[in-house]
Image (cartoon, rainbow, N blue to C red; front, top):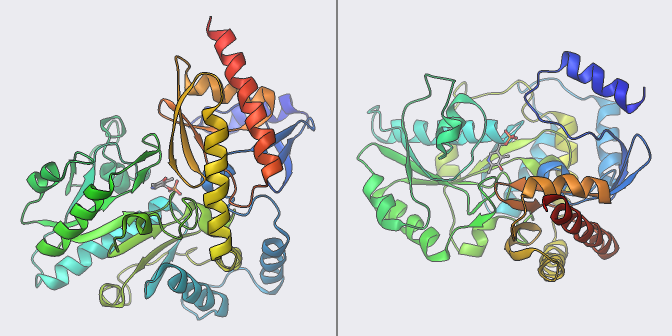
Length: 397
Ligand SMILES: *Cc1c(COP(=O)(O)O)cnc(C)c1O
């Protein structure tokens, strides 16, 4: 099939929930991907922060293929070595004790919310204190509940009735958080860098203040590290930059290295409240995804994290030199580019012409390159980004 045929078939049969670009990819290697017309692109997106090791990492492929040749799925009714080993490694890397495996970020957040509510229910002898406070401009997923957890009014349309028990406080405003806590608040959930919200890092003082407040009031702190987690910001968890340890952390995007995989991690004390039948997922902990996640975690070494910091600093500095760029936000390899009079969507669209795949986050261009991207690929991507900025400026005249 050629591109036009693929596009026509897609348009006919796949619901139009995504506004697709006129590109269809064919194969990739590292941080480089080729489309069906053999045009080459540098991938500054990792497929929205998913391909943490880039395309076709040989160790990852070998592990996933090896597992699939044995068996890919039975069910969570049985033990599995790869599940146990991956959970052990995830706990070692993150500093938590227990894991629940899911398939996506929204599902991980649903798990985190259910766990917080169950813990609260048990602690309050069955009295329902299940309210969750999140932050304005947050993003927590697309299910009915995680849409409600998302602190942006635009997400609260059409799909009524939404799950009750959510309220929103202003980010970086501890007084506003205090004002929104009630006797029924069981948890506060936040992203330390609001990803979809525009790559907006929370202030250190604020995050530490929220953590202290949670401790003082017996409220659980949930960190949504679906985008920021697992090396993306140069630390295993982004909360480490803030020196806080949340009670529950949700993970997904980069965890499986390209396969659908999410996780909720927590302490033994809290995790014990998820007893038999309290939660579950048919595909959660799927063995192929687990085999991929295990390799991602094995490669998440101090050396890799150091490289992410250095490459992130390099990329940021290179981008700051480009025309029509007014600033770069974010940490590690999670960057948001502010533009002078250009639309982020236009720049991303031009990038596909000049050979770089990028994302938007509101008015910013968002970059989430693979953690293993090479300096050569970074330079190539930056050159393509520069051309995209110039083309977008010309087109906007
Ligand atoms: C992407 C994202 C989600 C949702 O993840 P899905 O896998 O799309 O369900 C939730 N929270 C944050 C912070 C995200 O970036």
